[in-house]
Each structure stands twice: as C-alpha cells, then as structure tokens.
Amino acid sequence: MIDWEAVRAEVTGHLQALIRIDTTNPPGNESEAARYLEGILRQEGFDPLFVESEPKRGNVLARLSGGDEPPLMLLGHTDVVAVEPEHWTHPPFSGTLADGCVWGRGALDMKNMVATNLMVLLLLQREGVQLNRDIVFAATADEEAGKGNHGPGWIIDNRPDLWDAPLIITEGGGSDFAVGEQRFYTCQTGQKGLCRLRLIARGTPGHGSMPHGDSAIVKLSRALAGLEGAVFPAHISASVHHFIEGVASRRPAPEAALWQQVLDPTTADAALRDLPISSTLRRELGAVLHNTASATMVQAGSKINVIPGEATAWIDGRLVPGQTAESFTDELRAFIGDEVAIEIDQYTPPLEASSDTPLFQTIVEVMQEREPDAPVLPYLMPAGTDAKHIVPRRPETQIYGFMPYRQQLGEEEMALIHGHDERTPVEELLFATQVLYEIVCRFGGLISRVQY
Ligand SMILES: [Zn+2]
Image 1 (cartoon, rainbow, N blue to C red):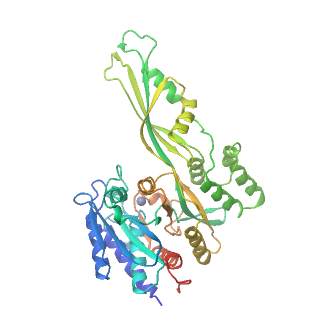
Image 2 (image 1 turned 45 degrees about the horizontal axis):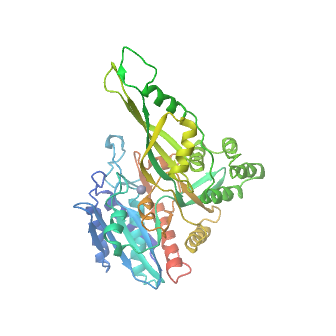
Image 3 (image 1 turned 90 degrees about the vertical axis):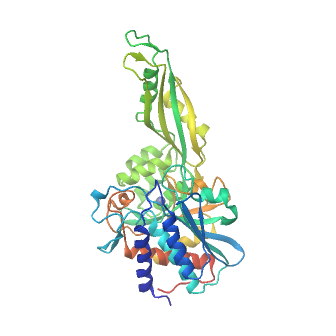
C-alpha cells in the first residue's frame, strides 16, 4: 500500500522546487524547470527527453510503456505570468509553506498540476502498475504569453514523433463550485475560439478648421456605440447543454425549470438573468452561451488640426463551439452597421471534445466514489489553454481539463490565479495526486481500486 503521508511531502517538495525556478513568461526560461523534472525522472529510472525550441525554452517528456491502447498524456505548462511582488504576503518565488499552503506564482496555474502529474508517473513506476497503454508525461513551455511558439505546437511541428497521444488530461477544469448548497465539479470538455479583428472606418481627410460631414472617427464611433449593451444570440453547445442539465437535475423544481429555460436560445437570456446564482457564475454562463466582442484598442489621427481619413478599432472576439469567423462577423455586423470594414487578424477555432467517452466516464466514476455528493459536469471554458495549439494540428485529440481541486479558501479563491498571493493547500495537492493516480490506474492500467 502506498504511504500517502510520504507522497504528500514529496509532491509538496516538487511544487516548492518548481515555484523557486522563476519561469515568468516573457521571457519564460522554462529550461531550468524542465531540467529539474528531467533530473527527477532520470533518478527514478525513466529515460526523459529534453527538447528546446530555442535556448532557455525547454520542454520535457517522459513515457511509461504499456499495452496497445492509444496513449494517454498528462500535460502541464511550466511558465507563469508576471508578479507584482510588493503585493504578496510571502515572496512569489519562495515556495513558502505557511497556513497549510504552498505559496507562490504557479501554485494554482499550473505548477501544482505539473508536480502532481510527475508524482502520478513516479507512483505508477514504483508500484509496477500494469498498463494497457503508454502514459506520457509532458511539461511544456510558453502557454501564458504570445503565440505559444515554444510549447506543444512547436513539438508537434518539429518533433511529431514525440507527440502520439490522442487523449490528454491538462488544466482548465476540475475545481468544485456551488449552486445553493449543491456542490459540483467541472471537467473541461471545450473552450471558446478566438477571432481578433479590426474595424476600419474610412472618410474624407481634411483641415480641422472646415468640418465636412464625412469623418472616419464619427463613423467608427457610431459602429462602436452599437456594441453598447449588445447581446449576441445564444448558442447552446453540447458541453453547456450537459452542464445545465446536470445542474438542473440537482435543483428544486421551480429553479430547475429556470435552468431548463436556459437551454432554449429564445428564453436563455431572461432565464439566466433570473437564476439565483452568484454574479461570477452568471457572468461566466453569459460568456459560454454567446459569442462576445470587446473593443480593446482604438487608433485615429495624428494631429489636432487634421481630420484623419481612417480610424481603427480592435475587437477581441470569442466564439462558442459550432461558430465560425464568418458566422461571428455576421452577428457582429448586426450591431455595428455597415459603415466600417472588418479585417480579421487572428482566428483560432472553438474546440469541443465529447463527454461520452470511456476516459470522461472514468473521471466521473472515480470522483463519484471520492465525492459522492458533488457530480462532475462537462464544462466549456470562456478562455483558452494549450489545447488551441494541439487540436488544430491533431484534430483527433480528445483533451479534458481536469485538475481535481476542492476550493477551501473562500469565494474569491479562483481570483488568485494570475493574482496576488497565489497559493495551493497541501491537502489539495494530495487529493489531486490520489484522484489523478486512480483515474490513470483505472483507465490506463489494470487496477480497479486504489487503497487510501
Ligand atoms: Zn495555465
């Protein structure tokens, strides 16, 4: 039987060590973290592979060989976002252990899961778990900034031989949340796509002393004013459908009826407004039910006495599964009118994996035993993960976001991600290690029950 007390100390130590390596991206410097992981894996008898897209942008992969079923990958990124150290209770790269938590940048996003993934692999090896498929560990660079040129996308493009797993578990879901007294867990099955575009208004240039009624700035302003309070049509993706049905099935009748109305695009917005839920959940549900468009930058003119001939606004557009750049710009057009041109700068499609698969079912079953009162629901994420670099290159891949985690630090806990005082309770590191280990043992191995 596994000594779980020892595992708790070991996984905590790995998380602390990873936090102490500053991998703020940019510039990243993930190689040092990858080298740390490579060292541990080598000590334990693995034959890990360290690959750099360029100096200091390192990735590490390791494999435990099993049977002929399709490989399962445990994936995590080692880079983190920047900090403002003056706002932290403990220094952000100290990995301080205090109040039952490991403190530091990356404690929740996502050096915690890198450490638990590592621990799961080590346990599989030490316990000699018989496998029906290869289990692949990947700790990759460059998720948090820019175009993600140094992580999974780079590996698939440059070392396609290293990337053969059509099933992946990574970040983006796994936390619990409550509706009333009822707790649920999320498992990410999909994420919204990205459509970044420019609105360009053209007018007649001229001298500021003589207005002429054909101003690019005024045209652009009219287009942007159309976005004020704009509610795009509701689109119910499969992930959101299953999520809503799952919540409705655990709520009292009058409230359950409201949840059911969210499933009908014609009543979704009114029902969402009336649901007795937190403002955070309402905002998040609003984002996953609709395409959205936020104006984030504008530019026009260069001199106070010159009427410019052109004015530009940048729009951050996000698309629900099933939508395309074309369907999105059609919807956008209805709000902004036709005085401006639309030019698309960047498009990544929305993604969605099925929740009707043996791997998803295994996640549900393991959690049912650990947390019988809190069912796992498919979940569509409003933002993106590394999945956006993987699925377009390997469309057959099924990616699930599942880092099991019980929120203990209160309402604002998820705001610690990318915020100040990011930290993770040691208890949750152990919980995640046990749950992920059991999922892998049952799905990828020939073990039906793990002893705690
Ligand atoms: Zn992350």
